[in-house]
Structure formats: C-alpha cells, structure tokens
Image (cartoon, rainbow, N blue to C red; front, side):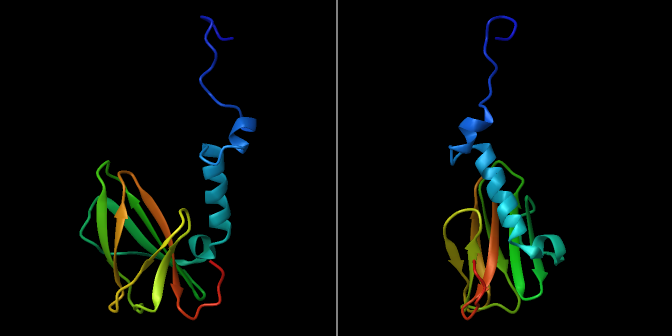
Length: 133
C-alpha cells in the first residue's frame, strides 16, 4: 500500500508477459522486428516525398532489402500517397507490426492509411523474392 491506502496504478511484468496487448509484448515485437531488419540499423536512409507534412516517411535499404517506415505525428488520421522508384505491381508492402500487406500499382504507387499518431513498418517484397517476411 502507498500513502493514502491506494495501490499503485501499474501492472507487474508477470501479468504483461501473458497479455498480447501489453506494452511489454509490443516492445518485444519492435525489438524482434528491428533485429530481423538490417535495413534499419545498417542501411541507407532516404526521406520519401509526399504531401502530408505531419507524416515522416522514409526508406531504408541495405543489400537486397528495403523497408518503408511511416510515422504520423498528428492526432488526425492521414492517407499518405507514396511512390517507390524501381517498384511496380510485382512488389508488395508487407506490414511487420500488424498482419497484412499492401499491393503497389504498376507505377510503384500506393496509398497508406495511418491512424492518429499511427505508424507502419513495411517491408518491400518483390514477387520472386526468397526472403522470409
């Protein structure tokens, strides 16, 4: 008990280990995806141009891998139009933090929906890629 007779407002680690929606589980997922994505730590970094000033979108490339990260710094949802050079409809964007993927158009464009303060880590995967996603 804390002064005043109230219990602290936190959940212990043991409870979070078994909760797939806990902060601990989310942090473990981020760490696992970061370790699986050498593009993020070792790759070249390039900011992607788009018309939403509230969104940071960047491309990290390393060896034969590419990853697009988007971060909405606004509380309002945004739809971000992107164009990836050297990509076409034979590529897709596989979400590393949520199930699902987004197809690219023939000209390498896609529209990505981000919730308020939302984020996406999307691996660029070619149709003939042998890389595990």
